[in-house]
Image (tube, rainbow, N blue to C red; front, side):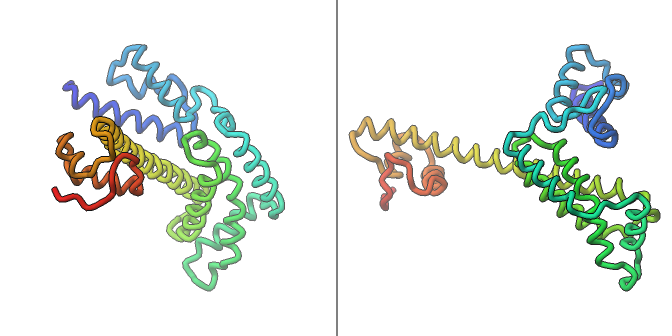
Length: 257
Protein backbone atom coordinates (compact mmCIF):
# COMPACT_ATOMS: atom_id res chain seq x y z
CA UNK A 1 0.00 0.00 0.00
CA UNK A 2 1.41 3.39 -1.04
CA UNK A 3 2.16 5.86 1.75
CA UNK A 4 -0.33 8.43 0.46
CA UNK A 5 -3.04 5.78 0.13
CA UNK A 6 -2.25 4.55 3.65
CA UNK A 7 -2.56 8.08 5.08
CA UNK A 8 -5.94 8.56 3.39
CA UNK A 9 -7.18 5.23 4.73
CA UNK A 10 -5.93 6.08 8.22
CA UNK A 11 -7.76 9.43 8.23
CA UNK A 12 -10.93 7.84 6.87
CA UNK A 13 -10.82 5.06 9.47
CA UNK A 14 -10.25 7.53 12.31
CA UNK A 15 -13.30 9.51 11.18
CA UNK A 16 -15.36 6.31 11.02
CA UNK A 17 -14.27 5.39 14.55
CA UNK A 18 -15.28 8.83 15.84
CA UNK A 19 -18.64 8.45 14.11
CA UNK A 20 -19.12 5.02 15.67
CA UNK A 21 -18.30 6.44 19.10
CA UNK A 22 -20.77 9.28 18.60
CA UNK A 23 -23.56 6.80 17.84
CA UNK A 24 -22.65 4.89 21.04
CA UNK A 25 -22.88 7.86 23.36
CA UNK A 26 -19.32 9.08 22.79
CA UNK A 27 -17.86 5.74 23.84
CA UNK A 28 -16.11 2.96 21.95
CA UNK A 29 -14.49 -0.36 22.83
CA UNK A 30 -10.80 -1.12 22.36
CA UNK A 31 -11.78 -4.20 20.36
CA UNK A 32 -13.86 -2.06 17.99
CA UNK A 33 -10.92 0.29 17.43
CA UNK A 34 -8.49 -2.56 16.80
CA UNK A 35 -10.88 -4.19 14.33
CA UNK A 36 -11.42 -0.89 12.48
CA UNK A 37 -7.67 -0.36 12.03
CA UNK A 38 -6.88 -4.02 11.30
CA UNK A 39 -6.38 -3.44 7.52
CA UNK A 40 -3.58 -0.96 8.33
CA UNK A 41 -1.66 -3.43 10.53
CA UNK A 42 -0.73 -0.76 13.07
CA UNK A 43 1.94 -1.36 15.70
CA UNK A 44 0.91 -1.18 19.38
CA UNK A 45 2.65 2.17 19.71
CA UNK A 46 0.62 3.55 16.81
CA UNK A 47 -2.60 2.20 18.29
CA UNK A 48 -1.72 3.86 21.57
CA UNK A 49 -1.57 7.19 19.75
CA UNK A 50 -5.04 6.50 18.32
CA UNK A 51 -6.42 5.83 21.81
CA UNK A 52 -4.71 9.00 23.10
CA UNK A 53 -6.31 10.97 20.27
CA UNK A 54 -9.77 9.59 21.09
CA UNK A 55 -9.36 10.35 24.79
CA UNK A 56 -8.26 13.89 23.96
CA UNK A 57 -11.51 14.33 22.04
CA UNK A 58 -13.54 13.24 25.10
CA UNK A 59 -14.34 9.77 23.74
CA UNK A 60 -14.53 7.10 26.42
CA UNK A 61 -12.61 3.87 25.82
CA UNK A 62 -14.62 0.80 26.97
CA UNK A 63 -16.63 3.03 29.28
CA UNK A 64 -18.21 6.49 28.97
CA UNK A 65 -15.91 9.41 29.76
CA UNK A 66 -16.85 11.66 32.66
CA UNK A 67 -18.60 14.54 30.83
CA UNK A 68 -17.98 17.00 33.69
CA UNK A 69 -14.24 16.39 33.96
CA UNK A 70 -13.37 19.22 31.59
CA UNK A 71 -15.85 21.79 32.93
CA UNK A 72 -14.50 24.87 34.67
CA UNK A 73 -15.97 25.89 38.04
CA UNK A 74 -17.82 28.69 36.27
CA UNK A 75 -19.26 26.25 33.73
CA UNK A 76 -20.34 23.85 36.49
CA UNK A 77 -22.19 26.70 38.21
CA UNK A 78 -23.80 27.74 34.93
CA UNK A 79 -24.87 24.16 34.16
CA UNK A 80 -26.34 23.71 37.64
CA UNK A 81 -28.41 26.91 37.31
CA UNK A 82 -29.45 26.05 33.76
CA UNK A 83 -30.62 22.53 34.65
CA UNK A 84 -32.50 23.90 37.65
CA UNK A 85 -34.32 26.31 35.33
CA UNK A 86 -35.30 23.41 33.06
CA UNK A 87 -36.83 21.58 36.02
CA UNK A 88 -39.54 24.25 36.04
CA UNK A 89 -40.76 22.99 32.65
CA UNK A 90 -43.45 20.29 32.58
CA UNK A 91 -42.14 16.72 32.54
CA UNK A 92 -43.20 14.84 29.41
CA UNK A 93 -43.79 11.10 29.42
CA UNK A 94 -42.57 9.04 26.47
CA UNK A 95 -46.04 8.64 24.95
CA UNK A 96 -46.69 12.38 25.27
CA UNK A 97 -43.41 13.18 23.49
CA UNK A 98 -44.42 10.78 20.72
CA UNK A 99 -47.80 12.54 20.36
CA UNK A 100 -46.07 15.92 20.18
CA UNK A 101 -43.66 14.53 17.60
CA UNK A 102 -46.51 13.29 15.42
CA UNK A 103 -48.16 16.70 15.62
CA UNK A 104 -44.88 18.39 14.63
CA UNK A 105 -44.44 15.92 11.75
CA UNK A 106 -47.81 16.77 10.20
CA UNK A 107 -47.59 18.17 6.68
CA UNK A 108 -50.89 19.99 7.21
CA UNK A 109 -50.05 23.55 8.35
CA UNK A 110 -53.28 23.66 10.37
CA UNK A 111 -52.59 20.35 12.09
CA UNK A 112 -48.92 21.13 12.83
CA UNK A 113 -49.62 23.01 16.05
CA UNK A 114 -46.89 25.57 16.86
CA UNK A 115 -47.55 24.97 20.54
CA UNK A 116 -46.78 21.26 20.10
CA UNK A 117 -43.46 22.21 18.47
CA UNK A 118 -42.63 24.54 21.35
CA UNK A 119 -43.44 21.85 23.92
CA UNK A 120 -41.43 19.28 21.98
CA UNK A 121 -38.46 21.65 21.86
CA UNK A 122 -38.65 22.12 25.62
CA UNK A 123 -38.73 18.34 26.10
CA UNK A 124 -35.33 18.01 24.41
CA UNK A 125 -33.51 20.93 26.07
CA UNK A 126 -31.92 18.78 28.77
CA UNK A 127 -30.68 16.37 26.09
CA UNK A 128 -28.97 19.29 24.35
CA UNK A 129 -27.25 20.25 27.62
CA UNK A 130 -26.07 16.65 28.07
CA UNK A 131 -24.59 16.64 24.57
CA UNK A 132 -22.87 19.99 25.19
CA UNK A 133 -21.09 18.49 28.23
CA UNK A 134 -19.47 15.96 25.88
CA UNK A 135 -17.89 18.78 23.85
CA UNK A 136 -16.60 20.77 26.85
CA UNK A 137 -12.91 21.50 27.23
CA UNK A 138 -12.28 22.38 23.59
CA UNK A 139 -11.97 26.13 24.04
CA UNK A 140 -15.67 26.92 23.66
CA UNK A 141 -17.74 28.03 26.69
CA UNK A 142 -20.42 25.53 27.67
CA UNK A 143 -23.04 28.27 27.47
CA UNK A 144 -22.18 28.88 23.80
CA UNK A 145 -22.33 25.16 22.99
CA UNK A 146 -25.78 24.88 24.58
CA UNK A 147 -26.91 27.97 22.66
CA UNK A 148 -25.74 26.52 19.33
CA UNK A 149 -27.37 23.20 20.18
CA UNK A 150 -30.68 24.84 21.02
CA UNK A 151 -30.70 26.71 17.72
CA UNK A 152 -30.07 23.44 15.87
CA UNK A 153 -32.80 21.73 17.91
CA UNK A 154 -35.37 24.39 16.99
CA UNK A 155 -34.42 24.08 13.32
CA UNK A 156 -34.64 20.30 13.54
CA UNK A 157 -38.16 20.44 15.01
CA UNK A 158 -39.22 22.29 11.85
CA UNK A 159 -37.73 19.49 9.73
CA UNK A 160 -39.56 16.61 11.39
CA UNK A 161 -42.06 16.48 8.53
CA UNK A 162 -39.41 14.74 6.43
CA UNK A 163 -39.44 11.67 8.71
CA UNK A 164 -41.54 8.58 8.16
CA UNK A 165 -41.80 7.52 11.81
CA UNK A 166 -41.88 9.36 15.13
CA UNK A 167 -39.23 7.10 16.64
CA UNK A 168 -36.69 8.49 14.14
CA UNK A 169 -36.96 11.97 15.66
CA UNK A 170 -34.58 11.66 18.67
CA UNK A 171 -31.73 10.35 16.54
CA UNK A 172 -32.19 13.00 13.87
CA UNK A 173 -32.49 15.86 16.35
CA UNK A 174 -29.44 14.89 18.40
CA UNK A 175 -27.35 14.39 15.27
CA UNK A 176 -28.25 17.93 14.17
CA UNK A 177 -27.31 19.20 17.63
CA UNK A 178 -23.95 17.38 17.59
CA UNK A 179 -23.16 18.53 14.06
CA UNK A 180 -23.93 22.14 15.01
CA UNK A 181 -21.64 22.02 18.04
CA UNK A 182 -18.81 20.39 16.09
CA UNK A 183 -19.13 22.98 13.32
CA UNK A 184 -19.09 25.80 15.88
CA UNK A 185 -15.94 24.37 17.45
CA UNK A 186 -14.28 24.07 14.01
CA UNK A 187 -15.22 27.62 13.05
CA UNK A 188 -13.79 29.03 16.26
CA UNK A 189 -10.65 26.91 15.90
CA UNK A 190 -10.16 28.36 12.41
CA UNK A 191 -10.73 31.86 13.77
CA UNK A 192 -8.16 31.29 16.53
CA UNK A 193 -5.60 30.10 13.96
CA UNK A 194 -6.19 33.22 11.88
CA UNK A 195 -5.86 35.43 14.95
CA UNK A 196 -2.68 33.64 15.99
CA UNK A 197 -1.12 34.10 12.54
CA UNK A 198 -2.06 37.77 12.57
CA UNK A 199 -0.47 38.21 16.00
CA UNK A 200 2.69 36.46 14.84
CA UNK A 201 2.86 38.77 11.82
CA UNK A 202 2.44 41.91 13.94
CA UNK A 203 5.00 40.73 16.49
CA UNK A 204 7.51 39.93 13.74
CA UNK A 205 7.17 43.39 12.19
CA UNK A 206 7.32 45.02 15.63
CA UNK A 207 10.56 43.18 16.47
CA UNK A 208 12.17 44.29 13.20
CA UNK A 209 11.01 47.88 13.76
CA UNK A 210 12.38 47.89 17.31
CA UNK A 211 15.78 46.60 16.19
CA UNK A 212 16.07 49.21 13.44
CA UNK A 213 14.82 51.99 15.74
CA UNK A 214 17.48 51.11 18.32
CA UNK A 215 20.13 51.17 15.59
CA UNK A 216 19.02 54.58 14.29
CA UNK A 217 18.17 56.05 17.68
CA UNK A 218 14.65 57.04 16.61
CA UNK A 219 11.36 55.68 15.34
CA UNK A 220 11.34 54.47 11.75
CA UNK A 221 8.98 54.98 8.87
CA UNK A 222 7.33 52.07 7.02
CA UNK A 223 9.45 52.86 3.95
CA UNK A 224 12.71 52.75 5.91
CA UNK A 225 11.71 49.48 7.52
CA UNK A 226 10.92 47.99 4.12
CA UNK A 227 14.24 49.13 2.61
CA UNK A 228 16.41 48.02 5.53
CA UNK A 229 14.79 44.65 6.21
CA UNK A 230 13.71 43.51 2.76
CA UNK A 231 10.11 43.19 3.95
CA UNK A 232 7.43 44.30 1.52
CA UNK A 233 5.80 47.64 2.27
CA UNK A 234 2.40 45.95 1.99
CA UNK A 235 3.21 43.41 4.71
CA UNK A 236 4.36 46.23 6.99
CA UNK A 237 1.23 48.26 6.29
CA UNK A 238 -0.95 45.19 6.88
CA UNK A 239 0.71 44.64 10.26
CA UNK A 240 0.22 48.31 11.13
CA UNK A 241 -3.47 48.07 10.28
CA UNK A 242 -4.00 44.78 12.15
CA UNK A 243 -2.37 46.25 15.27
CA UNK A 244 -4.60 49.31 15.12
CA UNK A 245 -1.53 51.41 14.28
CA UNK A 246 0.02 50.72 17.65
CA UNK A 247 3.45 49.34 16.75
CA UNK A 248 5.51 51.52 19.04
CA UNK A 249 8.65 52.02 16.94
CA UNK A 250 6.97 52.95 13.63
CA UNK A 251 6.13 56.52 12.66
CA UNK A 252 2.63 56.64 11.20
CA UNK A 253 3.15 59.27 8.52
CA UNK A 254 3.34 59.40 4.75
CA UNK A 255 6.62 58.00 3.52
CA UNK A 256 7.72 58.41 -0.04
CA UNK A 257 9.10 55.06 -1.12
